[in-house]
Length: 271
Image (cartoon, rainbow, N blue to C red; front, side, top):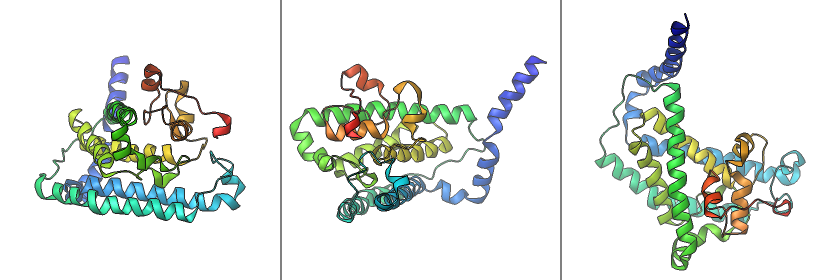
C-alpha cells in the first residue's frame, strides 16, 4: 500500500504540468517553436514589470500606503529619471536585443517541443540550478568589473549613475553588460539540459527577480523576505551595493558575498 501511495505521489508530480504543456503544445505550437519566442517572452515580462513598478513610483509620493515600502521614501523617482533610463533601455533593445533576436530567427533552428512536460520537481530544480549558475557567473563578472578600473569605467559605470535604484535601472546598462547577462540566461538552461518549459520559466523568473532587486521597495512578499536565513540578497542589499559599490556583488543569493568577504547588511539609514 505504501509503495502504491509513493508511486501515485510520484506520478502526480510528473503529471501536474502535463495539462498546461498539452494546451500550449496544441494551441501555440508554432509560436513556441519560434527562436524569437524566448526573446519576446523576456522583453514582454520586463516591460510589464517595469510598467507596474513605475506606476507605483509615480503614485508613491501621494499614496502613503505605497511610499512606506520604499527604501528611500523621501527621495521620489522623477520624470527625468524615468525618461533617461527608459531612453537607454529602448536604445539597447533596438540596437542590441533586436539584432540578436533577428540573428537567432535566421540561424537558430526551431525549438523542438517534446510531447512530455517536465515533472514539477524537474521544473523547479531546473530553475533553481540555472539561478545558482547564473548567480556565480554574474558574481565573478561583477566583481571583476568593479576591481579593474578600465572595465568599470568602460562597461559598468553607467549602471551606477543612480545610487538609489528604481526598476528602470535594471537594464540601464552598457551593451556589453546586457550581452553578458543575455548570453548566460540563454546558455545556462542548455548547459543544464533543461526542458524548454523549464527554460522559459527560468527566463521569466530571472527577469522578475532582477527587476525586484532594483525596484527600490521592501514589500513583505519580496524574495528576500520569503527565503530564510538571509540566503537571498534582494532589493535592500542591492540598494546597499549602489551606495557602497565595493560590496554585495552577487545578483541574487548571498553565499558568494559571504565567502568572498564582500557581504554587507543594509543599514537603517540606507532604507
